[in-house]
Length: 172
Image (cartoon, rainbow, N blue to C red):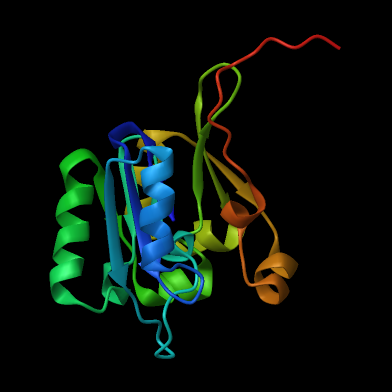
């Protein structure tokens, strides 16, 4: 699942790791107002196993591989929904599969500065124009993690967890 926290929405690529009935139960329990689920297909003919492989939603932008959304109606729904509140950066299936361009994460540091975390592979996979669009939305933090990407099959987004709890001052 990929969350659009600002708009109380979740996007989910259905697969063996994302069941539609469990998705509905989860969103009902957590108070998510809108669920946008869809079918996907990789270049190998299989469903995309994690939504964050093909999509990332940040503050004011969204990266998405719409070409892998196999149903035309679902693709249109996803793109219309994303473009309502985000500057959409479309990536190709090659950018998704070979460079992990969909597997990035927008966070804020302690000072509230927007950061966009991605691998060196993802950065190299984005076109110059796509890089410039991303830079408008935050400072790019680029990490070289070839072993994780080649052997683990994931990228930067997979190694990070988002926390959406009220801020608390801590002293050590």
